[in-house]
Image: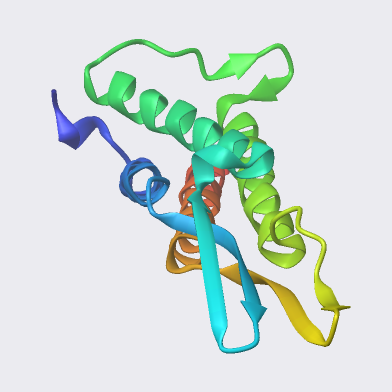
Length: 154
């Protein structure tokens, strides 16, 4: 494995892909239920939600590209009229959008306040540390892909 074959953009993609993969096992989203003085909370990783799962898988595909390039595998620069740099940029942007959408929307939980016989129950969505690191990692994927795109156009 020759890391000197990697451009700055490839290095950023590689590091971001590794960070995204590692933090995909951390808690990303959850829900908190409060009934009077008692509360319970549950949270799940990126692997439990469709959009974040797809974002992690796209990040792993980009990481595989970097590993193959470091190993010396010849990868074509063009696929028809589309360059590899353009493909990487689109894949990274899609991964970022998937994580951003899930961060905004949260888990599929009905939130609000319900009263049963005088007992008030409140349900709220929670966002955990993992989704914020995942968002930063996908921003890194976009930045690395953009650096590759700029380099291919120079």
